Amino acid sequence: MDGLMPAGVLAQLKAAYQEQFGPLPGRMLAVVAPGRTEIAGNHTDHEGGQVIAGAVDRYVSGLFVPNGSGRIRLYSVGYGLVDIDGADLSVHEEERNGTAALVRGLVAGMRALGYGEESSGFDACITSEVPAGSGLSSSAAFELEVAQALDALWADGALPPVKLAQLSQAAERDFFGKPCGLMDQASVALGGIAHMDFGNADEPQVEKLNFDFACAGYALCLVSVGQDHAASTADYAAVPQEMQAVAHLFGAGRLCEVAEADVLAHLGSIRERLGDRAALRALHYFREERLVEERACALKAGDMERFLELERLSGASSAMYLQNVSTGDVQEQPAMVALAVAEELLQGRGVVRIHGGGFGGTIQAFVRLDEAEAFCQKMDAALGEAGAAAAYAIDHEGARSQWL
Image (cartoon, rainbow, N blue to C red; front, side, top):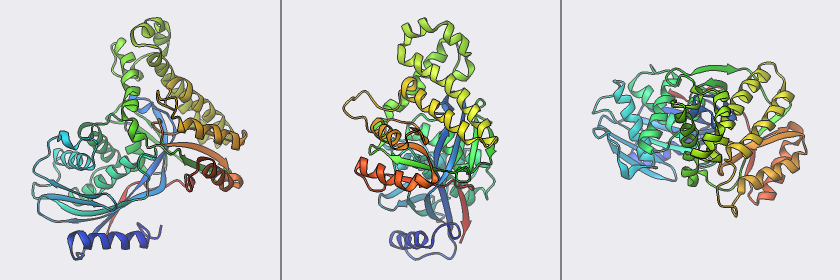
C-alpha cells in the first residue's frame, strides 16, 4: 500500500464521512487492520495450546474523528450506522451477534482500563475487503480496527498489541456472545507470522517467525467454499465446549491442564459419559499441539517440505478427529467438496487443509508459485464462483494507525 491505505480507499472513506457526518475536519485518524490466516493450530488456542497464524494483505480500513459528545457513531460502508451512547456500557441482549455489541464491548473495555471519559466519543467511517464469514476473521479485523483507534484516540498509543487483542476477544465473547480463543485477535494485532502459546491466557508467549513462503517457492492460497461459517456458530461453539467437558472430568478448565496419557487411560469412561465426538476432539487437541510445535521448528529451520508434510497430517486430524469440515447436514458439505477438488488439482504438489474455525468459510492451500494462478482459476471454475480462490501475502505490521 502507498502510505497507510490506498488512495482510492482513502477517497471512498472521505466521501462516506462527508455524506454521513458533514464537512471533513482538519485532522483525522486513519486506521487499518489486516485479516488473518491460521497456519497451524486448528482449535487449540481456546484450550491453552499453541498456534501459528499470519496476518494477510486484506484490510478493514477506517477514518476516526473525536466528537466530544459522548456518542460513538460508526458507519460501515455497505452495512449502515451504529450509534451508541458512551454512558451506557452494559451488555445489551438485543445486540448479540451484531456490530453494536462489539463496539460497545470495546469501549467498555477501554473505560475499565481507565481510558476515555464519559464525554469521549467519535465519528467514524470504515470499509472492509476482508470477506465476512470466510474464515479470514473479518470480526477480529473489525475489532482491532476499533481497538487500535481507541488506543490512539484515548490512550495515546499506550496499549501493547496483545492487550488490544485481549480487549477485542473480551468484546466478542462477553458482548457479541461468541466463545473464542485469542489467536485471531492476536494475529491481527501483531502482524507477520507468529507462533503463540496460550497456556497463560493473561500473558501468552509470542515468537515472531522470520519465514517467507514465496521465497520457499510456494503461494499461500485461500479458497472461499461458498458458505458463511457464521451460520454455524453453534457447531463452532460445541468444539471448545466438548473439549472443556473432557478437561472438567479431570478437574481442569482447559485441555492444556490435562495429560494426554490420562485421557488415553480413561478413554472408555470419557466415551461413556461424553460420547465419542468429545473424546476424538480431545485426542485431536493433543495431536495438533505436537504438530504446531513441529511446524514451528520446520519454519525456523527453513524446511518447507517438512512443513508441508506436517500440514497434511494436521488437515487429516481436523477432518477425522476434530470433525469441523462439515456439519450434521450430509447434503451440504461445501468445505469437503472444495478440499476434494483442491487435492485432485494439486496431485501431491502442495497441500490443502480446512482453515480456521471450519464449518464453511475457507480452505487453505500451499501451492507452487508457478502453479498458483492456474490453481485459483480451476478452483473458481469448479466451485462456480469467480474470485473464490486467491493468493495472499503476509502483512508484517498488523493493526496500525496514523493521524492525517
